[in-house]
Length: 317
Image (tube, rainbow, N blue to C red):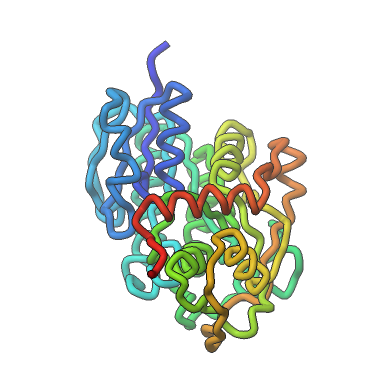
């Protein structure tokens, strides 16, 4: 049987690079498309030796012609942390709107399946806890985080429109906080921030009083769930994340313990519209995908800390 080709936008990013690896290992040919504003070639460097892997530097917000026969389009291109989408607000809106439209256009032209990487941020600062897929969210459309939240909400809307109007087999994953090796130390999210600060014995910055909650899923668990969703008949959104909830302050203390750091915790003003709670209801994923997170927080943090140590985040003398 001829090898099937998968196009992955944002394929050199944190999650995208793991998907490239997974799908190559499962016998697919990969076309990785990325403009590298937040992705990194170092994430996919080992894959260039694989004859089934091809990299194209391109911004999916601009049209592109793909000659290959495509079996699946996975749209993972987007800045995904507050630091990034506050730095690139227009690009974030464009990749969620024009980029999703272009990626769907490729899927339609190639008669391919389409997979959208959405986010728990579509729930905004939720008034429902934990968050189920049928919750519509509580989002400030004109706030600083709105550029990401609304870009992803539009992405979901146009994806379902293409499913209904053109019969495209579409999948939507709502990704909750995910972590692991290959996160950038300047990513701006809690885990890379805390690890970077702890390894240098610098003060660990907690926003507010640290009582806001998050649920952290290790990246290999997430990509396993993504693959299961790819292979499923589901078309409507599915939450993927680890439902074990903890406060940001608890996370900071755990990272100090695991790194053996001398860091102290300092408190700064809570950013505007920062969600107070975040916990996925994964009933749907359990029922239809037979999926749940397996990697415990301590195990995942140890792996992530090891990666940061190897990548020159040295302890201060």
